[in-house]
Image (tube, rainbow, N blue to C red; front, side):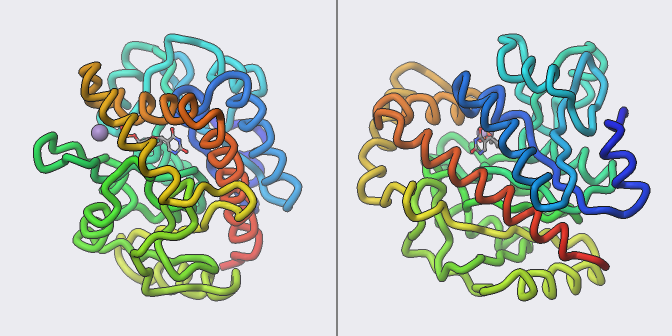
Length: 297
Ligand code: PSU
Ligand code: MN
């Protein structure tokens, strides 16, 4: 494992750090928005006084923090593997480049000793899961990780109520930030309530800090997409159905489903989903950095 200099210094002195994933760069957003967003996320975190650490696998080596050139490679190379937990040792042994998903990023962040991780929307239970059995590894890693994940809920392409049921089964504490319901990625509101609506950073921190006294209890902070960029659920829903049907017709399955749906939606929404996606990830990086900076325990 290699740690970028500024991240190593921050770790040594117990300074705030926010981890970022690379799947969103390599497989979630199109070029050049992916590259611009990756740099902007790091900038947002720095501007608030924390150190960003974008995590990935470079030539088989775990990288805790990437250089600008490496981030550029993640945004442009076509041979980057989408790495979930199970792919980690394979990509390492084969000396490949791997973009880490939520599940793999959480594992690496924990190994490095980073406490906060910002992303867009987590993976979850896919629609039609009773046939496909498609449930993201993300849920299991969030459940057992000491790293706090900050996101905008589960991706709207998923089955949200089933995802919430699995999160409950796995014992994940869900804390919403200024929202009464569980947000659905592009959309701020859904009909699914959240039990703990926190109004301030301190409200969130009190729970996060008490959680450390418990054993292996995962925390998910959900932060809705900024109002000006959100797409209401009723408006995005027909497009999601259309994208899922196209995926079915084309025989897309397994790890290709999520990237396929995200890029189809961008196309059929004339870029509206892309705008929302970028906006919500930035907003999550902002909240994660605030939490990291104020968390002095
Ligand atoms: N959030 C985004 N864009 C993404 C993802 C999340 O805004 O591309 C990625 C994350 O890396 C997440 C992954 O872990 O999608 C989930 O993939 P799957 O459904 O195959 O588990
Ligand atoms: Mn899957």
